[in-house]
Each structure stands twice: as C-alpha cells, then as structure tokens.
Length: 370
Ligand code: 13P
Ligand code: SF4
Image (cartoon, rainbow, N blue to C red; front, side):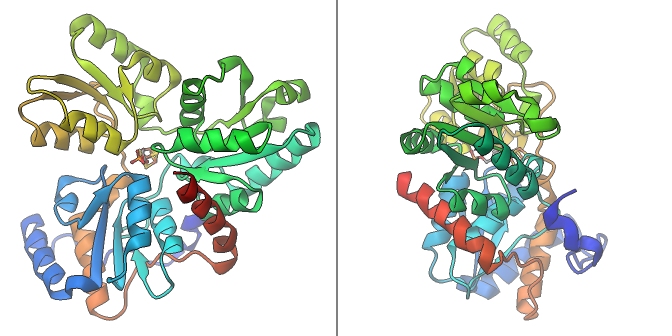
C-alpha cells in the first residue's frame, strides 16, 4: 500500500526484543539507564500524540512545525530518535546534516492521510490541471506526505505547510499564482481557505480515484483552490453531531479542535488550531474551565492529567486514537537505543539525494514564510 513499506519484506526493521523478555516496567528502567549511558549522542523528539511513557523520555516535544525547526537546530547528537510518524522522521532527516542519523523506532508508524496521495497520482493530476487551465497553479502540500510529494512541490515553485502555519503559507501561495493545488488534506485546506475569506464555491475537490479527479474542465477553470480528497481518519471521527450534543448538554464547555477535522466541526467549534495551539489555549485557561477537545486521545488524556483544575474531555465518546503514532512503544525505543549501542543502528530513515534536493527547497520555503 505504501511506497515506504516496500522494503518491509525483510525482517530487519522488526523490533529485536521478544515481547516476553522484559516486563513493561523493566523496559522503562532499562530505557532510563541506556539513555543516561548514551548521553548527548542521542536526542529524543516526541510528537504530542505519543503515549505518556514515550513522552516521558522525550528531550523535545512539539507539533510538526516545532519538531521540524528543532531538528534543524540540533548540533550535538549523532542520533535523533524520532517518536512520531514516518513523514516526520523523513523531514528531520532532510533538515539535518548527513552525519546525523534519524531513527524511527517502529517503521510501521506511518500516517493514513499521507498514504492518500502518491507521486504518480500527483504527477497525473498536475498534467491534467495544467492542460485544462492557463492560469498559474501553485502547489501546496501539508507536511503529512512522503518526501516524494514534498519534492514535487519544490520542483514546481510551491511550499509545504503545517497546521500551525497554513494561513501564512496559503496567503503566500495565492500571491504567487492564480490558483492553488492543496494536498493531501482537503479539510486543512478548506478550513484555512475559508478562514482567509475564500468562499466555499471557489473550491473543488480532486478525487484521484475518478477520471480527471471527477472534475469538468469548467469546474477546474472556475476554481481558486483545488483540494485533494485526502483526510485524517482519526479526526474524521469527530462529527457535527458531537458538536450539537455538547452544545445542548453543556453550553459553557469550550469546544476546541484540530483543523484536520471536517468543515462542519471546525465551524461549530469555538477554537481550532494545531496540537501546540490546543495545548497553549488549555494551559492558559482559568481554573474550572471546561473543554471538549477534538484531537487524538493520547494528547487529550495527557492534558486532562496535567491540568486537573480544568475539566477536559474528548469531543467524541469514541476516543479517537492514532494507531500508527501508537505503534511507537517504549520497548521499541529501547531496541533503537540498544542498536545504537551495538554500533548497528536499525530503522534509520534516509531520503535519497535526488528527492531531497527539491523537497528541501519546499521545506526551506515553508520555514522562510513561517
Ligand atoms: P500538528 O502539526 O498540529 O502537531 O499535527 C500533526 C498531525 O499529524 C495531526 O494529526
Ligand atoms: Fe496522520 Fe491523522 Fe495520525 Fe496525524 S492523527 S499522524 S494525520 S493519521
């Protein structure tokens, strides 16, 4: 299914510790010892969706933009253990010098949204769109995609964005051409464009499963923004019904969501922003403030524990979990450390030089805008 999984017929990537060898408690004890032993040689970066036991070992935590920036600034470590998903580790690899190795503790930690657009599909779409309209199209990709798509964007004069700088990047994109092609997340694209004053009627959805994206030439020519059909299956779990139910049950509760949620959910919520935005809003709240949070459950539960003077629950009763983020376990983190100590690091993420050339251009463009 995924380009990045093509090499997984080998078993090299699989964690080496038999499940039964160490108890969960022993793993945490061993992790503490080995982290101390390896000292500054290794830095652990942790995305906010990681489970608490993993976050407790992270030297740096953040949203996608913060982690990309921090990775680029690191000078000391030889190894970056990236506790997040594959596209984040790829980004860190591209932003760090070749002598630093980026390790993803479990290679199966992908992102289902990133899987919803591949280079072949984007090339096909681009060929069609640029044949249908003479207007300049600027490609913008959400950072949740493979390096190959980042490379496409760099090659065609566009930029990458994250959920925390999408407004700035889209504004920049519209200053560079007449139209935008935004992929792979239709929701982040739509929510941000509406916030910037672009009416819904000026946006169309390109569905790569249908001939010509399911769009007529007129629809393409009339559109200001062409949104790729992709979405996050975790944030798709939050619905308009959840908003309505909370409004009825507890009108004072603040509804705060991630912009990967659908348009209806973001419109119905009080606040929307990246994972760090959500954390900062909650951190600054007065005692007793009530929140229903529309994002990944590990983060929601952590916030509820960290701020017991607030009342924090998930927006959905079904507790949306990012199962791929959840694949990174302390056990695999320990195995990553052990492989470094053995002098034969496993699960090293490397982007080839050709892909990196243009992908880095698009990343640098994003960092310059934000
Ligand atoms: P943030 O950049 O907001 O942390 O989002 C990353 C992500 O994958 C959300 O699903
Ligand atoms: Fe991908 Fe959604 Fe998981 Fe974020 S929460 S990593 S977008 S699947």
